[in-house]
Length: 330
Figure 1 (cartoon, rainbow, N blue to C red):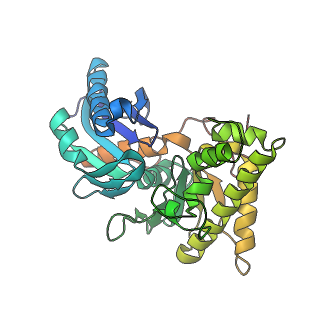
Figure 2 (cartoon, one colour):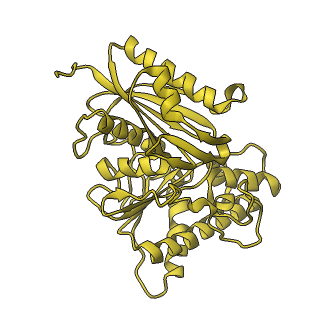
């Protein structure tokens, strides 16, 4: 069957703060984007379904025919059955996203884990292109990892592989939303950093960029920043010793701070690996769009459309890197 020239896929990245949707064309470029709060009307499932419907209508309005939709979320995701078993930041429990969105849109639906989808994007056209074994950690509202082994993201026995945000880095430390104490994402996620900064006396509602800008002059900002980079470096050492990745890719808002972030993380990783050379630690090529492009790739594969090497690669200059693989901070 001949496919229309203007065929597209829909890609939706459900985060703890916002839901980001895009209409992605045959060339991997986003033709249209849409962003809404995750908890609009205090019902994140309704918000996801509403955005998906709007995105389909927007695509049709552009004259593009959606072939499929990819929806990725954090948490414990049963990709085979299209069910989000549990996502603490979204209050999702046993949500049958594939059925709900498929019934709404009348399209094939690929449901995936956001970090694993981001890993797919980085492997196809990003900072891990050409590698069969690597780690990707997007540092957002929470922290998860894409563990890629022999070229495939590892879901684990229960679909919960890569939930490294709940790795204890400070036993008995500060409480986490999961019910444990001392979890990595309490200290090193963008959301956790902001919460700790406010709780320790910093300016309320400051995001990770504002905290990074204040590190040189604000002792509270310096403390939480140091705690974050040290905790992450120790966690990366544990992951390196367990998985021996060829490369570690970091994304999310903290990675935008460039050398201010990457230098102490690399130092902490190196210090924790006394007897071996640490793997290179690079910035994500896609930045905050990684999971969304991964969702588009999942949708194309589900629809039987090709995904050539390099598909969806960022335009030159979108994420410039310095010699150490880190974007320079403007």
